[in-house]
Image (cartoon, rainbow over all chains, first blue to last red; front, side, top):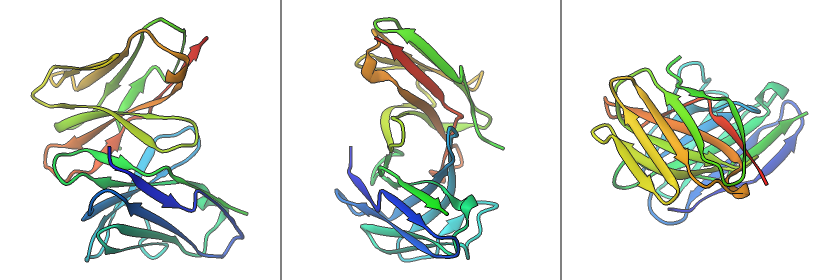
Length: 115
Length: 112
């Protein structure tokens, strides 16, 4: 399958700071990427769909001003958690949509801990 | 919530035995996919089955799909310790927006 990287893999920050997570497509140009959040021992919940060159589409209940998504190139999407609070501590995973078909390739995830 | 349900939530079996996990979903789908997640890691795509398919095989994996019951099963034969992981089903709805809805997951533990 395709290779998707995320950076950083782990981040610990103080409450009130902003954290940027990068998701890179290494094998092909991805016009569509997805951002998910996973709380401990739970499933993945889709946060938003990131579209290259246009605004992201957010799922119901996800604050677009808090979770800023930028997909400025075909190989990079970024998620910025603004003014992070302890309840934002979670595992954030991105995925890219394969050019043909419905398969998604997932990044290794970023563990965010907000103190 | 449109999230699918998986059962069992947790499954422990002896190495060499077969493991069966089930997934139910709520809406009409284009396809259903199974993923594996090792603890604290990303997801690995295992297999995709389309809505017009009933069964699919890949190595030691066998997936069935029953669209009339809105359910799928994943069978892992001759389990190995390395199969220890969480397994999730994911569906994308038939109105084709390619978003995946994940099931609640099954935590599989293979006992050596």
